[in-house]
Length: 283
Image (cartoon, rainbow, N blue to C red):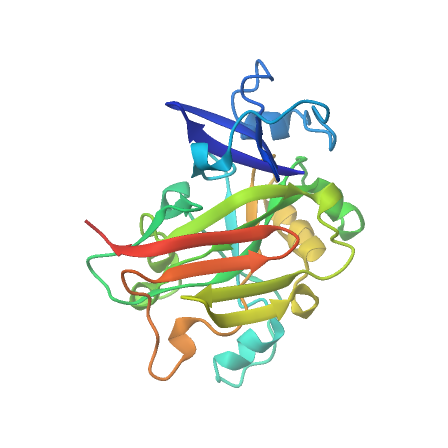
């Protein structure tokens, strides 16, 4: 089941995305004003309202970020096997994940414009799979870690490369420019995602494949990330774990291939969906 947040007829709502349109849940689930509330209440069984007709065409909505107001957005760096070698610094594979946080305001939704900031021309793409936490937990063992996953969405974890090096020990600045990344288009519930086999992730710029990888190449798999993060922080419903990008970002070309206004970036995983955004200059 695909679940999305959106704006329609002047109101924010959420619903089930079907092949023939959208079944609006905001009008059917009193006391649960948004998708975050419904996830936290465990109120979204797989066949919810299965016999009812869709209410809206997808053309009638403006997509919004799938999980409104996530408390935590954890981002994992250098998590595919070839990414460490891409740095060409001779280091061994890392013992623990690289980790940073992003703010909700650094993301836009599916179909919205990504902004290249005034202060840099080095906006880059990073296609990633996102875990959406559905059940709270602390000190979660790997054996039961996936029980805490509600579902999956996609991310273009847009980065402003020259600003990643402003601080001596962090990349936070270059990862948090307003509207530099994207999340969406919706959440696919884990029960319908077929995650017993690897996901195949592709990033395209103007139709050209730039990144292509499968999740069996992750150095730190999904269950490990949940166990590791929950060692020091309580995971809560609606928290997002952005699990890492493959090789092929624009910075790794010679010369680098930065995003420019008019470029269309697509991040696709067949069993999840396709996140698409066009680049504009910051106003």
